[in-house]
Image (cartoon, rainbow, N blue to C red; front, side, top):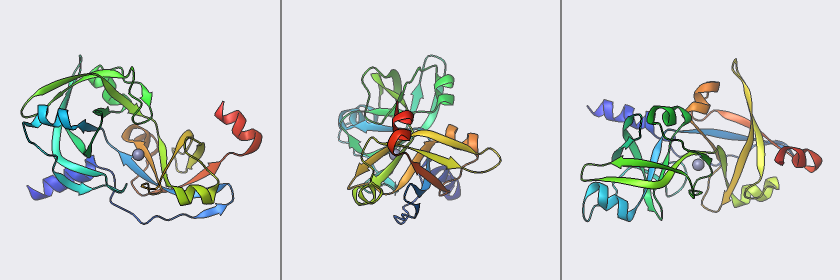
Length: 228
Ligand SMILES: [Zn+2]
């Protein structure tokens, strides 16, 4: 039983904390470790109570790589017009707005037309129903497919000459190698260097948690072309 639980955590959550390692290969190229995000849910305090009962607080199961973020004991069932997905992990701490992050594959299974969005950009996103042990809620909006992104500490961004909302390309080598374009840079004093992709993106390329990829910064006219 214990083993089963442990396995579930590994499959469902982003990787454990790693050291912030910045390797600059050339001025325009740096290395970034990959963290693979499975479908997950962020909840506001009000929705925690609706799903788990009065006075309930989210229970930390495991710290995630980004400082302050953690996987919770709690899970929910997602319900859409075409199907359900059980045991979807809740991530803490509670946020201002509830947000459901699914993959394109999940969106087909659920029949939920979730748009590709940056985390927190929920206006006009898809409706979805969440079922917990003590109640059910239907969000009018909140289901998204999270756009791939790189978390980066402010000091690292300064060193690389990057700012929040910049975009870079990231190369993944291998038999199904690919160049990920439009990888959003997200900068904060609370972030640690890591690229987040979802399970669809990772599986398409054969990526594993912790793989080191090379990110390419676009400067000058190249950046103008690629960012249009
Ligand atoms: Zn992320």
